[in-house]
Length: 478
Image 1 (cartoon, rainbow, N blue to C red):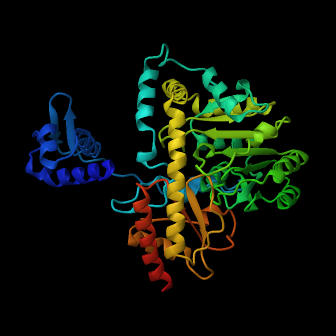
Image 2: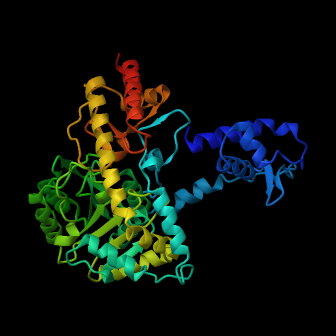
Image 3: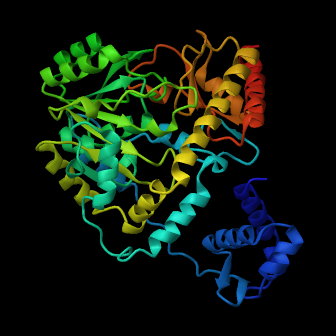
């Protein structure tokens, strides 16, 4: 059983037994709970911490856990209905509403209920994360001289240099800002490059989190369709002319959700079109380190072939490590760098120095290349297992492209099949899938599903998950 499930189950059992104890009475010791429930000390500690957060128990170091005394009745809840008017009135003059629908992001962040297979996850399963290497790196980082002091605002010089080498081309350490995860970097980039009310060109379909960022900043996402070779240059040129946009956000490598790689002949064309329009290209290079074992040589980042400063490059380590290892980089050159730097500092000050030091320890260790080779093999195996299971059990779902990088498959539903009905039926059958609608900034051409093969325990769970999806399919389609 996964640790998180054990914690939840133990917390629920203890919650049901609290009435046996008087307020202030001591609960059994951690050792007694370990022996009784046959769980680890860590599970007991986390379960008690969960109850303490709910105000049901009080923990005292060295003394144990005690049933909490009844709380003083809370003050009467005030009337907050005035806020609905105030928030709407503030945005009355906005060209673009700034209310945000975060549901497309939450789908990949929320943990499913116990027993539900997670085909909607956006991160590596704990068994694929380099937990031991990260723990060792963090321990070593904590002993570095000055590790707990204030870092340079732009990031540690050695870490900026490492990111710059990874991008290549004209990018240098002086053009790199260390940021707190890819989402934060994209937010900084869009705020720096486009004023509220402006259009921003986005791939269609594209990452829902980026659409949420744009709308929160008061920007107008304008879709530019992609095909198996990435964003379509002719339609991109049309979109720039029609809208006057000054920003394109794209994912040239293993695009989310289609998995497409921008074709070699399109790379220079995209940069030329953007340069002619006087526009920036925000390159979200989010899964370069999740290449599969059978992939050929990867194309360089667009930023590596951009001497004119058209590209603002975003690179993150989070997808290849852990959801909590939120370290990324913004790379640019020219006057735009100062604007990016100012906005980042205002928003976040800096990335905590211990995390930056731990990053240097991790990527400089022998464990790092071993980890990348390990996940390259594991992701290929999982991709092949999911592809084979889908083709065997659900041949009606179109799989136009099998990627050689990333962590998911993008499936098109037959005409007339309800995306929302299938998603709901799948959850009832015990498998969580991601609907395609949030990936489109305008009306989608068809229903889609995105299935992740990285967030599950292994190939056995993949096979079972597809079987459950087949059950849901039978209920919806017949």
